[in-house]
Image (cartoon, rainbow, N blue to C red; front, side, top):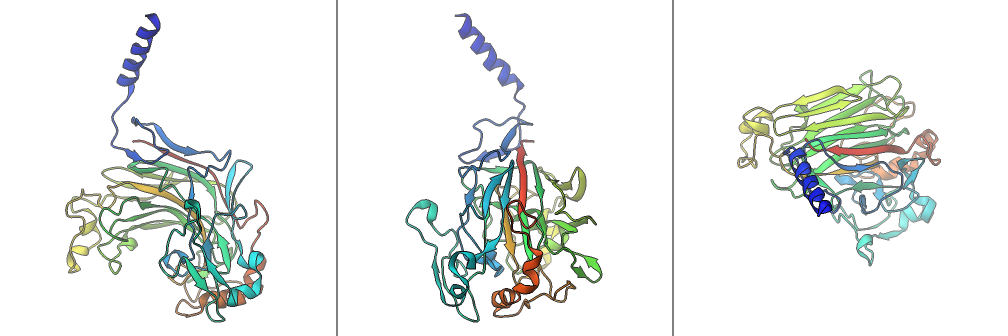
Amino acid sequence: MWSLLLGIATLVSLGTACTPTVTTVSGTHAPSTVCSGDLIFSDEFDEFSLEKWQHEITLAGGGNWEFQYYNNNRSNTYVRNGALNIRPTFTSDQFGNAFLFNGHINLEGGSPAERCTNPQWWGCERTGSATNILNPIRSARLRTVQSFNFRYGRVEVRAKMPAGDWIWPAIWMMPAYNAYGTWPASGEIDLVESRGNRDMLLNGVHIGTQEAGSTLHYGPTIFHNGWERAHWVRRDSRGWNNDFHRYQFEWTPDFMRFSIDDVELGFIDPGSGGFWEFGGFNHAGVENPWRYGSKMAPFDEKFYIIMNVAVGGTNGFFPDGVQNPTPKPWNNLSPQAATDFWMAQGNWMPTWDMSEGGDSSMQVDYVRVWAL
């Protein structure tokens, strides 16, 4: 009887101690009960949990014609000394160089874990040619789309950015359900992006390893994206690749705040008109996809976490005309950008350190998410 009473008292105590929260969660690794201030998702990377992190498997190039293909391979994702490593490697190491120019890749496997995750842009099957070689880089993109989705909370990721010419690391979030339609109508939250070039200048400004940025993508159509009003950068003369830093994001029903090492990088409150008026779309002659959402729409639905290392691409993230110790080997309008990149490997390959735990790997010490 005493143990029963003690159990009831404990439940009552726990119940009164649970402060309500606006945070909501779902997924196989989401807690069943969420209280304000709770740590609701974490990975300290003492081991590599493939239940928490699902691999993308695709040749699609992120929709930007990036030069990597994403796969599930311990050469590209592994835990070492308490940190997750995402390391780019060369496709030719597995298949040989000639394979890039005439080989055939079909990523569709027979088991659920081997299915191609993105068929767009010839993402599941490709044949190489002299002008359009197969993706010359192997890398990885990890996501929590099955294990953890959340709306509102605080995020902190302690990570070290990679270095190496034309490497593009990112830690970001995408909507779990596309409640307002396809990209960018349902939003995108970029916690941090950087570039691996150690000494790259644009108009006299270092935009390589010395620059880290946070961005929101949102808009009613792919032709209407208000990211420029929600984009912030910070520069560190030592480079974000030289040490671990804490990349932080606070997401509430009223505002969003991005910080690095507890120093605010960007803050946004869209106001009563929401992101529709904040982005200036009310003058664009298009329909408002968020008219039935809150002022934070599209950022009032659940998102999942993504971490990846990309290379190159033609969307302008690596602008034409940048100054680099060796010239940028492709033009963003080139129909054979990946071929141009690979044929210039004598210039950029010496800048990559692909040893285990080397400088060209993005290293993540931990990922933590708290309820508000």
